[in-house]
Image (tube, rainbow, N blue to C red):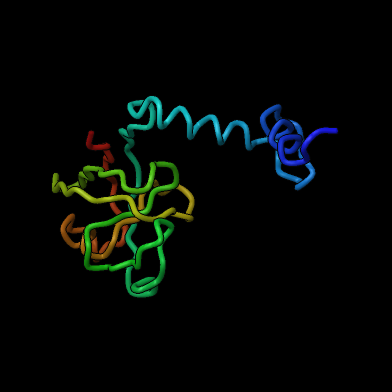
Length: 140
């Protein structure tokens, strides 16, 4: 008779659905995390796209990293970069650059690659427009 815990792990590892109903994508997600840990250069970003900002409605709420969101700090939300990653964000319309730390997940609006804190948006001079075309580069 096999151990139910190891049986579930075996099924997740093989890509089959286990007793808890976990989806088949878990092996891929777990593999991606292992690759990111083993080869940090693979998760480096050099993206160009639209940035937006968030602030007042989220100020004080808990972020994906577990810390409280402070709209006055230089932080950002990104869908895939590991939490704690530092990135350089360049506003391609005016050349302004800042360094922010990824501490949350998002943006959840289509076509956007990063959500910046209010402070970061002000430094990039995109606060009043709400969005800007940016380059996002990870800092090693």
